[in-house]
Amino acid sequence: MDKRIIKTREAIFNAFLDLAAQKDIDKISVVELCQKAEINKSTFYLHYKSIDECFQACFDFFSSQIVSLGKDIDYSSVSVSPEKNVSEILDSVEQNTRYFEKFKNTLVYDYAIKALKDNMVEAICKVNDININDNYHEVAKVTFLVGGCADVITKLMPHYNREEIEKLMVDVIKRK
Picture 1 (cartoon, rainbow, N blue to C red):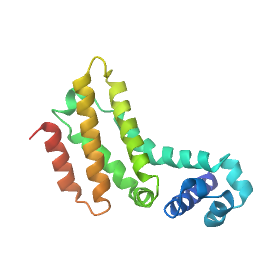
Picture 2: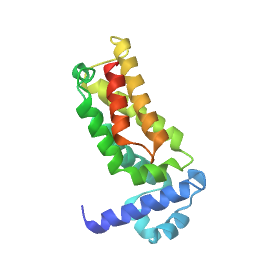
Picture 3: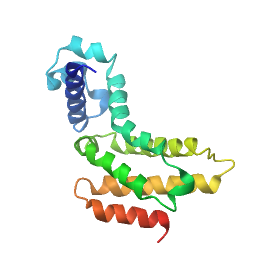
Picture 4: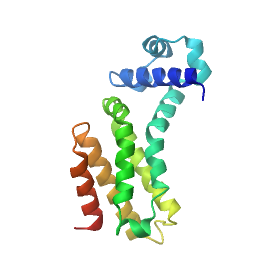
């Protein structure tokens, strides 16, 4: 992707998160967002049709790397050897810490984290062919693990100790 496009989208994303920390999304205007991002309205509309589409793109960007990790989790081996999966998840969180911090201050944070957890559970279940009708216990366990891990990470951002959290998460998954 062109560097100018990346720079513009990052400016829009940062401006959006800054404004969303101050007010409801439905109260953010395109003009206000453009002023904050230091872009023209026409530039905004080259990338997005509306504020809602912009929010969806921001949320998708925010969650895509983490949710994509769920597609690589082999449920049958995760309870025996979760170290790699936990490490990859924490790597992704650390790579996106500045976005997490900005996003954490928005008024839609709780909704977005719930959606992120749901998407992660769905990704893990889908790739491992686990469904609620045939594998209730497994779906419940995946939901518990994803929810617990996400809550630990998001509640302690940005002041968390990577080694302690990684050990805690691995121990809980292994049921120590």
